[in-house]
Image (cartoon, rainbow, N blue to C red; front, side, top):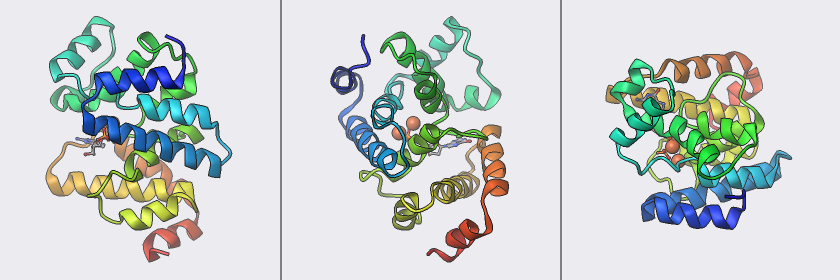
Length: 202
Ligand code: DGI
Ligand code: FE
Ligand code: FE
């Protein structure tokens, strides 16, 4: 299948449940808006946004079996929390089923849940759009992070990582080492001015 946005949108409507499809459209449009703000590729933002959760509505068994069949590595945390694999499996399906060959788009799908140290602009945009899209309701500090995302991308990234780690710590969720490494990396990267924006909520 060609990387035609309309075709991929239709394919997502088929493969995702209605709520996940709505979320997907929200991420695609929010990612496009962030790409406009930060001079990124609007097309790639839409493409990665549309595909980022393409493996979300598969069963855990199916995700595990796709990994095993195609030699995709599974760490201990992923084995115990197979929903985390929707990012790895999603990036595989984006290549194999949906014909995506742009490595940046593939990486944006692959790293959209845990992030990674040294993310590209597109990876950051998808990670952030996933958290702030209009359909999201529950996260703390959402209004502030939504505004911050259009002012200082790295500050928004750090805020999301910190809130996600807090949420996992409070709820007893197992933390993937990549999520903590990403947070630590961006703590060091973030300049003091951004740090002030995060803590003051301005
Ligand atoms: O697929 P979505 O729900 O749209 O969003 P997502 O892929 O970012 O997944 C969000 C969930 O992933 C959220 O509940 C926090 C969780 N998460 C992020 N990093 C980790 C994690 N869960 C665990 N157990 N460990 C992590 O390191
Ligand atoms: Fe996801
Ligand atoms: Fe998502």
